[in-house]
Image (tube, rainbow, N blue to C red; front, side, top):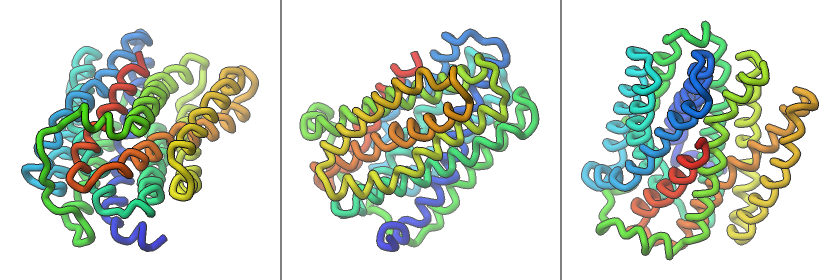
Amino acid sequence: MNLIITPFIALYTSVFLLMAGIGLLGTYLPLRLAVDGIATQLIGFIMSAYFFGMCIGALYCHRLIRSVGHIRAFAAFAATTTSVVILHALFVSPLLWGVLRFLAGLSTIGIYTVIESWFNECTVPTFRGRVMSFYMFMSYLGMSGSQYLLNIGSVQDTRMFFIISLLLMLCIIPVVVTRSIHPKLPHFDQLNMRYLVRRAPVGMLGCFLAGLIVGAFYATLPVFCHDIGLSVADLSIVMSVTMLGGLLLQWPVGVLSDRFDRTYTLSALCVAVALISTVLIFAADYSFFLFLIIMILFGGLIFTIYPVSIARAHDLFDADDIVPASSVLLLCYCIGATAGPI
């Protein structure tokens, strides 16, 4: 366990703070738009703009990493994302927010590329599943905990954007001051997407499916909870327990994926998601408590598809391919996440 956590302690800390901010923003924006009376269809397109920006950014962010290295690139991407979040508070307009979501996607994908290529480049295959699972554990710990900040002030209070910005700025500090293990300046040729996809088709497909499900979850669940009459406090509980489910299953699934064929693990997860989703359709009408229990299971399943997929893909790549492969894997995720809310 120490061999997995200790070398990446600074990066894990940054991931916690980063995802606390990203997760809070992802829940707050659709809720704020719903309270302001914006049509559900328009909310879906606004939230999809974020993932579309990530699609475009995935094609180009690796160039900055190649030029200045992981740490400087992380700081640049995080500072840009923070600036975009602040602009949400200065100008309240659905059309402008759609543009800002696109810009946030451009910069956020760079952060994810830095983090995931960092983990995969500095990890041996026998520990990769557990390293990625702890990465996701810290992600959902931050995201689930930050949901309760929704109860600070009214929904239309713009101070929420500054709280999110503070979390995003703090995530830069552990990375830029770390002396722990970090990758060397990457060297790789032009991004060859066709080669990368053909090399690891199962991992790429898994990332696409993860994005499809998770993108729809983040964009529509706050609107759904608002429409069925749940309070903001109830919404924060629903979002939190769903992410808590993802947190609880990360380590067990990571261990299983290290011990068994990751392709079979991924297939089993997808079948389980289909089954629990069928039950979820009826749970919301039955009781709030049952709805929460099912959402814990749902979150535990959908949030483990992505780390297993990227671990499966990176098993097939050499060190020189890690950064471009991470970009393409995130691109597949973002394509799915763009389609999900729509």
